[in-house]
Amino acid sequence: MKVLMINGSPRKGGNTSIALQEMEKTFREEGIEVETVQIGNEDVRGCIACNTCATKGQCVFDDVVNELASKFEAADGLVVASPVYFASANATLVACLDRLFYSTGFDKSMKVGASVAVARRGGCSATYDELNKYFTISGMPVASSQYWNSVHGRKPGDASQDIEGLQTMRVLARNMAFLMKSIALGKEKYGMPKQESEHIYTNFIG
Ligand SMILES: Cc1cc2nc3c(=O)[nH]c(=O)nc-3n(C[C@H](O)[C@H](O)[C@H](O)COP(=O)(O)O)c2cc1C
Image 1 (tube, rainbow, N blue to C red):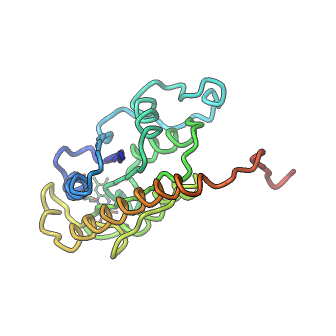
Image 2: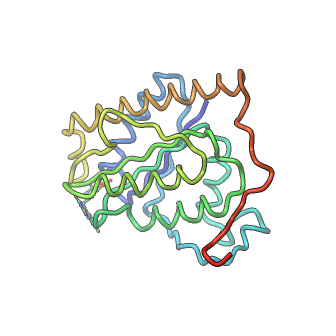
Image 3: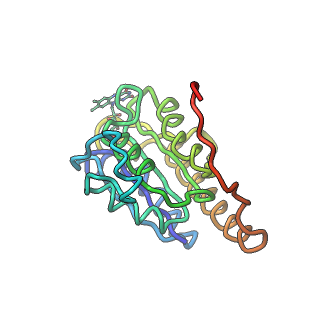
């Protein structure tokens, strides 16, 4: 059983890393394999809506997004974590997730998702909601914790003092591990939910 964690921060050893390290430790205690990829310093451009991915099966820009695609496909769960920038997820992470979710055709349903927002003070719940949108359009159950998943700190290292935030991370990882294990058992016993043969797409003009 495996979890992929994407860290949107550009700062090595920053507060988002501290939040994710707390989750990593808990996942390992739960017997879950973890891989964390930090993308905040990568040159990740936004989606150009070329739709090349529809025929090629991967993004036209062959960068970290295509590397993440195969890791995501192999994972049972995905954690996305962002430093809050102007009450939003940071732009590099948003560009990465737009392209990752848009360009990959594999079935994401029943992979468990969790998002984490890290800020000095404000914008955590807006960022948390923003990141959960990727999961909830993809048939992915969302793991939650005892509080909306946020950790506070400004300078790198500050987050280690946010003891409530770190407990929230541990509880989140435990809940997520439980969900992933339960879904694996459910798949064995009941199989995956039946899928409709055609995915209907409409817009407001037809
Ligand atoms: C461009 C920019 C915008 C920011 N906007 C916010 C914000 O809206 N709210 C907030 O509380 N902190 C904001 N911060 C502070 C970071 O969220 C905070 O320092 C966080 O701990 C960074 O995480 P990291 O160490 O993992 O990079 C901002 C920082 C930067 C660089």
